[in-house]
Length: 232
Image 1: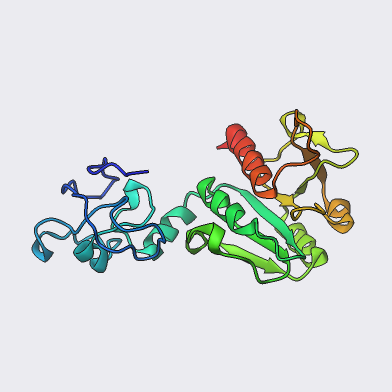
Image 2 (image 1 turned 45 degrees about the vertical axis):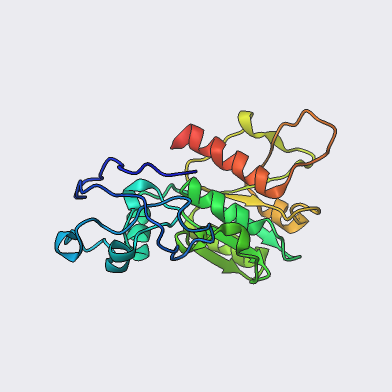
């Protein structure tokens, strides 16, 4: 999707016009010139002195897949700004079989501004699906369910498991705490018995078709949206 070429500036941001450019993307696999802005007009003499701006981006253009308010900002500046706004829910996923959905879940967590993503099990995960959003999203690893639940207990966060097992409550009718961890199972087997036992509550997504379950990444996006609908 093509970004607006002259977005409304955020507080402290200059209103200098921002033309479309064809500079190569710095951290985005999308081909150049499909979205973004070109070099800052007027050359270095016209560059803003706001420390959030990246001089290389001002010189070459910014074709990253970021919202307009973050155009030309350095990655560190964007992360720092997001950290001041993050929602109090966390997302966790078990990763015993190198689940390929994790990248997409990280991307959705960034879109819904989750506090953190937790990988439980195997440390290695496929980052391709994250589309570089993992650079803006905090990701933490836990060796096993016991280590994860110990962290959640210390943080004072209830764990809400998401799985269509016996006793689960449809999420639209379930209690969904403002500060919590939403725990998802991997594609296929779902959540482990240890994870379900450690959870404060178990919710499910109401379905109307013939299949027993939906894709793990899709389920995560639905639940995160439901949290944001209530609390964001």
